[in-house]
Length: 109
Image (tube, rainbow, N blue to C red):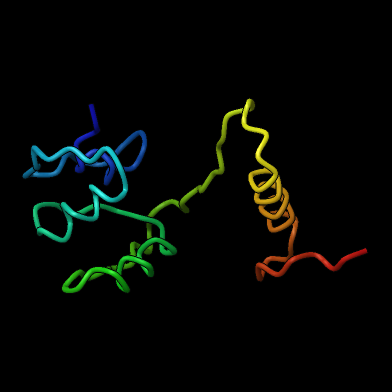
């Protein structure tokens, strides 16, 4: 069963419970977007996701959380998946992590 949307909006190890919660459960990102578009819930997302949401959902507003901990995004996949595209994506992500602070890829050497 999916997690309550309001649980996704809480900082790990702290925060206060929301005064009102929804009974909606989002099992997928698409379901979360549908719940938000229907104005039945709010949630926190990384700034990169918020930029995409603004482009695809009319009437949705984003508010930067300046004091929130930085979001950590991770790529995960099954070890048994030997798709070459997955390996290419993982390599690209690793290279980005090694890039400069401005997000540029390291120079080919």
